[in-house]
Length: 157
Image (cartoon, rainbow, N blue to C red):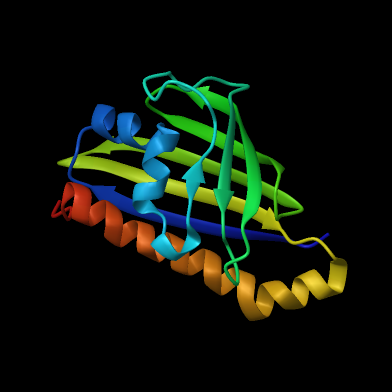
């Protein structure tokens, strides 16, 4: 199975606590996901619940061609204010391991995403990644950068 890596950094003009509160809430994912993906959190839990290792979050999402899929992730690691990891338990990928890291910097916070993912179906999956999936994932993260800047403003250092 071929594994792909995407690493992104974004600086935000907010406090570490503000960044953690926003990004550790699954309900905010829809705000920073392209609307055409029809991203809906389907988990039945209180939006004020704190994230914890073992937390299961379910979604409906249309990642490609408008096809609705169920997606389930588990929060596997949490160090409050520093990082958390979500891993796919059920969904479109053969592997999805997404680390979210936060670090205070002068005038704000540095947010780093480290994503490891794999596509099922061997060579066909590799071709699909090269032609379609990699570009789609990059566009999702590009959208997120813009959406987060609209919510919090642009970091000026």
